[in-house]
Amino acid sequence: MRYLLYTILFFGCIQDGCAQQEVLYTQYMFNALALNPGYAGNKEFNVNMTYRHQWTQLQGAPKTMLFTVEKGIHEKNLGLGFHITKDAIGLQKNISPFLSIAYRIPVSERTVLSSGIAIGFSQYQLDGTGFVASSNADPILQAKLSSTILMDGKFGFYLSNDDFYVGLSAANLFNNNVNYTGDKRNIIVPQKRHFFLMSGVVLPISDKIKLYPSLLIRENFNQPTNADINAFILIDEKIWIGGSYRTSFKLISKNYLQSDLTQRAAASASAQIYPIKGMRLGYSYDFSIGGLNSYFGGTHEISIGYALMPLLTSLRISSPRYF
Image (cartoon, rainbow, N blue to C red; front, side, top):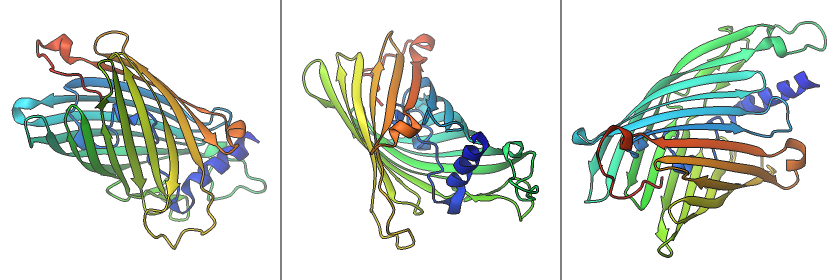
């Protein structure tokens, strides 16, 4: 039964390239480097680590780790970034390191427009030893560990100041086809180009309370458009409390999709705290809406962010970076 679930998970993710292939995060609004290379340098000098365990009751379900580091070089109007993702689902794993560089242009006293590019590669692995054939060995499903490495890129724009941001980015620029064994008869997974539109704003409610609504729209033209609608409250510059609603909708006509696709939704509850100056700790719990949660279980995501700049320089930041 375990191997059957692995197989279902794997083929469910690659069928016709219609599934969401880019890694999903809930707390992206506090660190968007993995989604948009134009974000590089937005937080002076910052490191972030994220761990996500999705559908905890399902064996072989997705597990993701993300590490990012970024630094702004203000005298040259540049932002530099690095992020590496390790993602595993069933018998499939991939590791993807990327280097980012962004050129940051001041468009007003407080607002900066950045354009960035990220170049890296992805190592895709398929552990064929986990497949169990019901009859004779299938030449397509070879009982060995297969691996391939492909170059890839991302591109993005990011407009922001201390109170708001809007960004547009694209991932999987090379539209790679992942061939795990080099044999054209074997499993080939097309990597579809993904687009992200994000926006958020921090609104003061009182001296000690701020409201932070944000939006993320995902599009790859091979599935219904996905959207995250988020809202957080910041209390006394120390605690964020909020949640998200994730759903899909018809943004543009896609007649090639099934007309009877079931629209599923999910929600999450999140909290972020600043235990010491410069450090952020975050936790979110995602759950499906519509009864699937009892079968798959919820999703846990933990993130840690730390601003290194106060330790390395006497630079004073006039206001905190909320996102």
